[in-house]
Picture 1 (cartoon, rainbow, N blue to C red):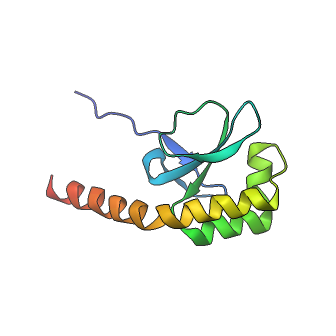
Picture 2 (picture 1 turned 45 degrees about the vertical axis):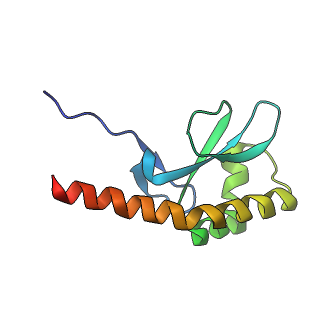
Length: 106
C-alpha cells in the first residue's frame, strides 16, 4: 500500500513549505470576519502561519497577512489575533513535539 500523501502549505511569514497540520490557519470568512481556524475547515480565504509568535509579528510587520487574505486587516483585529495566538502557541508547540515523539517510536 502506498503511503498517504501529506498536504503541504506555505507559511506566509517564513515562506517555508510545511505539513498542513504544523501550521495555524487564519481565515477571512465570506462576511469579512478574520479569525483563527484551528480545524482548517472554515469557509473563506485562508492563510497559514508557523505556530510561533515571532512569525505572526513578522507577518504583521510585512503586511503578509493582508496580501494573503486580500483584504485590509485593522489594528484591533491584529491585537485580537495576537492574543489568541499567544494562548495557542504553547499548546501548539507541545502538540507538535508530541507528534514528533510518536514518529520516532515507529
